[in-house]
Image (tube, rainbow, N blue to C red; front, side):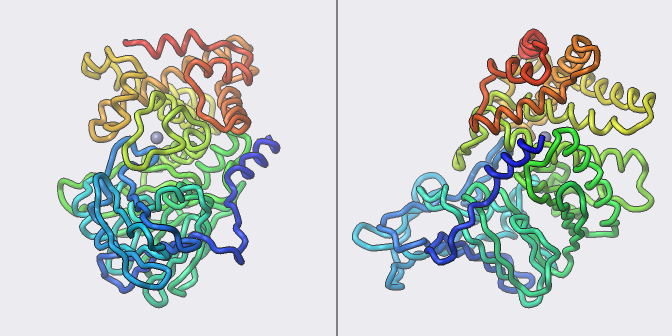
Length: 478
Ligand SMILES: [Zn+2]
């Protein structure tokens, strides 16, 4: 699997632009503790002919829904190559037209109101936040792009209040209390998919695994970062071993354990990214020395699930995942695979390493739970094919979690039956894992989305077993 690892690192490594050449630069400034706003300045590589269009994301990669982050952007300012202010006009959708014909644009500046964002976005996992001694920023909630510049490498400068430690998932390191840092992103997608955390209340831990693992944590109560780190490292090592290599040079687990902003706010969803995952949870999910074995199991499983998404769908995906459409959530046919197969493999890695009887019982319990979810679903959802359900879930996965739960349950049960068939036909020599490794190899080789019809052949390349019949059975209405 060394070849796979090398190839993956190659396609995922940031493009290091020559520092002598003009480069697209983003400067993010959070000026003072307690401030509700961040300011972002985009400096174009050269003054560009106006008009340009500035676009703020409304869709989140793998978010299966929309958030109108443009609502929190105000004001937007622009300047010419001579430093003169330029006209800015808001248009339909999350867009601003910058400048007018005959002038050149050098710089665009805007502010994002983070406090309002957190008040109005009720799903904690979709919002950035400010506290008196901490700021947590999701890239796609604060970074806009200039239409046509999405594929250019970006230099990012981050400034915070004096002596604040600043952490970026793009260049993770133990943060010094310097109030500034810098990083590089290969494209807007990579920048938007990253996170920034800063402030005296930010805790960071660096752990050594197959790749360096960083755990960044902010908690509004007493928790043990070392215990969170131990579970996260176990999960990361399990998933890397499952795939036979890591597709990232480092990985970050960013945890925020929060007291609710209002009774309407929801805490509990986590989100996967290319080289990191975010866990914006209620304080009840904090791990201390008093936490039960079940709670530790649950958190380790949640880490494993979201770390595994760095492979599927972040790097091996069906149509709609990539290239990503930032202004409207894409309609995706394969959420059952991304969520279901990954849930199944998280069950597999979580049951491994236990005594055999315990491992079997764990797997049985988890699969029974999924069968229970399907059995208790409303008939109209059971009657939908998995592709129909996936299209509905593309915008309502967590908003109406009946769709999300059915997608991951039916997808995971499909994977379990595929695994049983592969093991049976190969007398235990091959398993679903070999199919997943084959899917990764295929995705690295072809660098495109797979089609559903191609899946059985891709999986069979690693296992020698045809699972088409199992797939087609589970795709049909129940
Ligand atoms: Zn997931």
